[in-house]
Length: 96
Image 1 (cartoon, one colour):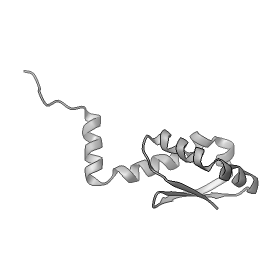
Image 2 (image 1 turned 180 degrees about the vertical axis):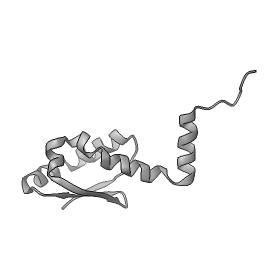
Image 3 (image 1 turned 90 degrees about the horizontal axis):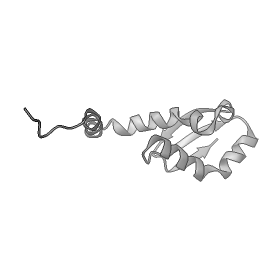
Image 4 (image 1 turned 45 degrees about the horizontal axis):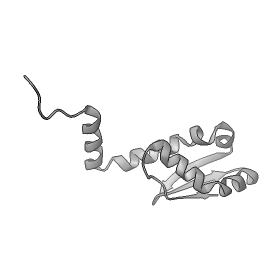
């Protein structure tokens, strides 16, 4: 007995997530969780209160020196985070 319409479980799960509208919140969660992996533990120690609203990542920074460094690298950080997640999740980053 041969199956003609076989699909992988991963593909079916992705289709279900897309149809139910759960793909975007999941990607946003994955992006926030990947902050420390992409920027490292030193920068992550000075950051907090990360949240995404309207494709903008808001990050609270406690060190003015690190805030200035991150402002200069904003586009590179945005690209690295989106690449790490594997989807275009954010279009801008705001450091507070």
